Amino acid sequence: MKKRILFVSLIVIICSLFPLAAQGGEEAEPQMRFAFSIMQLDNPYFIAVKQGFEDRCEELGVESIIVDARYDVAKQVSDVENLIMQGVDGMMIAPIDQNALQPLVETAKSQGIAVVAEAQPIDNAHGMHIVNEYEYGVAIGTNAAKWINEKLGGKAEVIIISQDNVEPVIQRGNGIEDTILKLAPKSVIVARQAGDTPELGMKIVESVLQTHPNVKVITGNNDSGALGGYEAVKALGKATDDFYVGGGDATAEALAKMKEPNSVYRATVDILPYETGSAVADMLYRFKTEGFPEEQEVVYFPMSPVWQEDVISGAYSN
Image 1 (cartoon, helix red, strand yellow):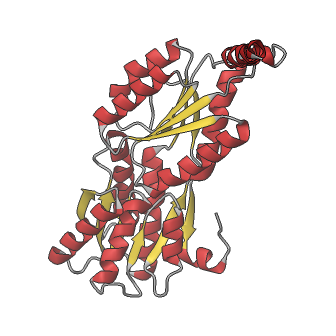
Image 2 (image 1 turned 60 degrees about the horizontal axis):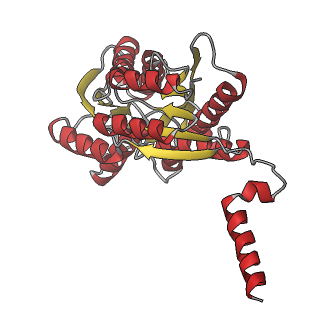
Image 3 (image 1 turned 180 degrees about the vertical axis):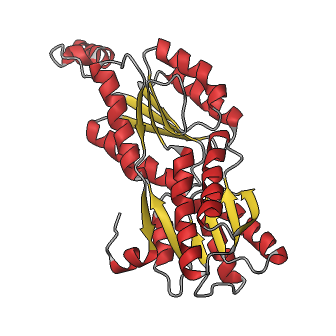
């Protein structure tokens, strides 16, 4: 009896040490792992990109890993270093500072890791899904200028909630400012301040409206800061029929605000964030299964204006 127990124990040990051999010698295909290094997950835009990325990775049978840099360059560098050490198969990076990341991208590429930049460029990545920052600003500024010309007689005091704390995105703010002053030249930009979260957007608007109570137009570089501005306008009792708050990214939060009773959230610009996350997962998968491109692949975001009346009527749905 003791011999039989010993024999069975040995079989269990062998199977635990060599599980594939016990299954007829068939080796399971290792699951690929794709990571997304996000500059700041508090931004509703990146929440949508993340969801699209995760959903598509699941469909492809790929494990997804998400890391949030929280707008800290040093943290993003450390995050990417850790992902390289983990041996991920691909990385989507929304860079805060591409100069800080380029050496790590070279290291990743030398180890066969696919790298795609998202939102802002990384010049030595295998591919990029990015926005033309200045043209995006033109699209956002055109919405604001249309409101000024049609509802405010061609002139208004304007607050721009920018992202001037992120080097590549400064051009978006320039596009907004240039376009408003070109299409509604009697307008005045009374403030342009960086506020790329709802909390910062609210603080900016609360402060500026104290010194410029006649402001009628608030436009954000994205919906994130503009959402905070919108809440400040409501809290201060400034939400009149001719007031304009607008942004960009067509986030679910902004679309929901447009539907609120007496809402002054008038417009945004759709750049398909969910679809972008999915498309980058596809690009990484293609690079890993079909080979890396000889030249960097660049895809620019589409841009479509979205107006409040179309959201309310159902003519627009994302």
